[in-house]
Length: 176
Length: 339
Image 1 (cartoon, one colour):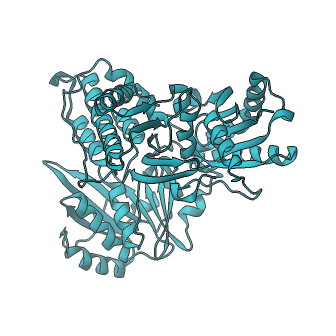
Image 2 (image 1 turned 60 degrees about the horizontal axis):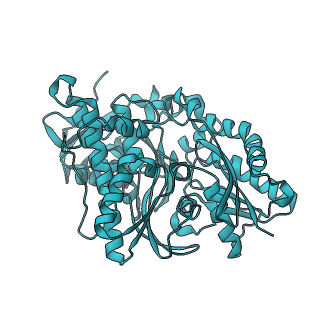
Image 3 (image 1 turned 90 degrees about the vertical axis):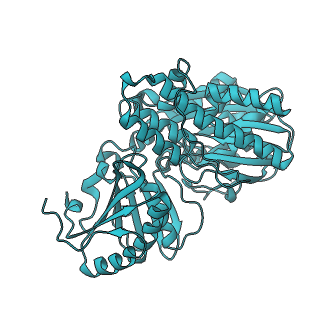
């Protein structure tokens, strides 16, 4: 469970699908070739919406749709983006021989993974994690928790995100 | 001499082969479904799918030839799906088709799976005249296209997030229905009240023929997380109300596409057109609007190789055959041409 052990977290509150997409666009600004973003959260919470924001932020202007059917969509922005969806995967062994290891260790691309918990052991330890969850009592709102490793990335990201939404004050990550 | 096309289709979870005469007459249509295999896993498993295709393809092609009473010597060209679909699955059919065509010295036509769905409409007695609007709706795609001529079309609208079939499948699973959950929702809905719960219909901006199902999916997920059996609405009511929201948007946008383009002919294509409520509502609305409706029989709506053979035949006639280095293309878009 390497990818669970972030060294920092930023907690955000999105007020709409548009907000979630905008947060994705800002997150894209700190991404570089080789980065992997794991998008966790229940069905319908907005993972594809967040992925769409990231893909737009990386400079691709076309349609960004759910990759559940083909499992991988490819986009070319300022970087190449692989948008992976493991919804249908029940066992990580199903992915052997399909080139998923390469997707999880991209050299010249950014990889976004929906339903990453279906193949947790394939995720690289330095992956950024984004957790989306419902906000009880506010049907449009979402909690978004971004976890990562490099302190510089956190500072830049937090500064940019604070401009558009509520952002948790800097606190040490939850010890659990 | 009549022209015989051998069609091969392996883009997802069906291994299929068919022989079609003159692009129109289905001599055989063999589909080896992997559904029972995938039920165990709760969905299509890519690695399992490719292995199953490998195991069954030779037998399926032999069965298609035998059933048609056509020998390999009488086959004039080989048509095979090259995308979109699961890469491992596509590769099995494409490599098989390529090798067969190469070995027999036959033209190869590697075709677009979604356009092939449209060609199911040419396999029935009374095909639509050009131009016609086609609603292509499946587990992976939801598109409105205007088909102008063989191999010529324009995109009128497409989904901005989830495909209709995907929304039906995912919400069906949340309801505890088994894979494939789309047909299960269809069955369950028959005994439910379509007006029991009011789920949102995404209309998008005025004049847009695009679709969006993610908001509806979210609303259904939220509803189900709070829903209790004792609360009044039965599971059948939830299924029927949710299905109605999906189907209504599909039908209204398809009708709008006909109206906006001045096209009085509407065809259906793709696995979701097997949905009984979609077929009924399309019939009802088209009658009222004076639009001629074309719906292939269910066996030709779901993935099959007869539609692939039909498209392959027409593309061969246009000289659009494929080179030996044609590749499987899992994300093949409408823009990339028929072959």
